[in-house]
Length: 446
Image 1 (tube, rainbow, N blue to C red):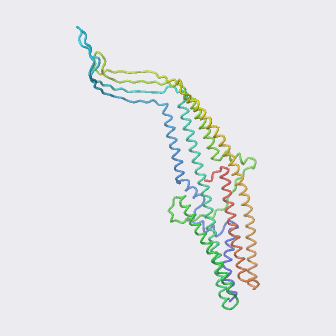
Image 2: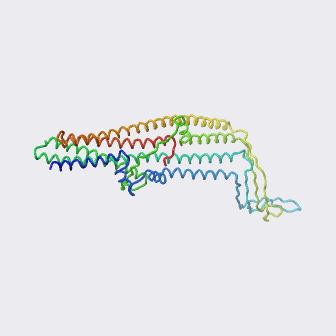
């Protein structure tokens, strides 16, 4: 009977060992459980987030707004045509009386006028061209901002995804640990009835069960919180409980050490946005220099009106054609200070660019160090888990031979569970650190 109980009591531990060995290889029961059609892959989650998240839509709308402003700026090359019509009744009407010649009326009492007016800018010393370039630069910044929003959302999604993955696997490990503890409790209660075990062993086992159950409650609460965060990202109903797949195979970026910073500076959105903002500031500076340049325009108007002598009430065609020239003479030194302000903006952006590059340098080296540390922890945790499994096997043999108590065996089992969680965390930390390094280098995660 004791042999049967022993075999039954170690069965959950064997299942746990299989589960933990699958964690070492990165495949196995967890991945199979999470690879169903209901589970979510990291790629699909990121694609769904960046396709419909509100901040992405706002950035996309900003680009459409910029395109409208470009079209508006181009209207400076297009003539303006309008039609005007008027009626006016004037009183008293001025009349001149000449002896022997009669009375002459200078204008009619009822005045009618209608005309079509045409206005065209002839030359503005490049103002319109610069305005178009300005709006094109604004659009370029909007497009780069959209990429930045997508990248940041992707990084946030990656962190959420791997946190969910850890919690899912950790709960499975706790379930296996609870199963083993409950089997041991059943065994100890049976042999206690025969006097072969003490109440201390029973109470200690119950305390271990309570501790693991409490840990599981915390994990479940964290899992619910992370699922709510993922539902918010995806725009799903909060009642759903998304499950993510076990995706821990991530290829780190391969970039020579001597060019890693130059690579990041070429690809990071912050640097690219600063470059475009600098270009925008230079365009504004050039536009400011043009503010005191002349404007040459062409105007034409054609229509019909009454009031021409001697037939005051006859509707007579008329037209006006001319050129207009506007030359600023003195603006109260406004342009001088506007230029100083525009130049200051360019200088400030150069300092901001330098500040951004320093932060990126720190972020790149920090991410690289974290990735190397996580990789080393994975190796150490794999070795630790193998040692814990071997120690558990030896403890199991000693327990069968009566050399140790069930509490010693449970301690060995607890070491296996803790080592498995450490390995799982190390593998997830490594995967997350690889994505963090990619983001620091400016590689697209989405």
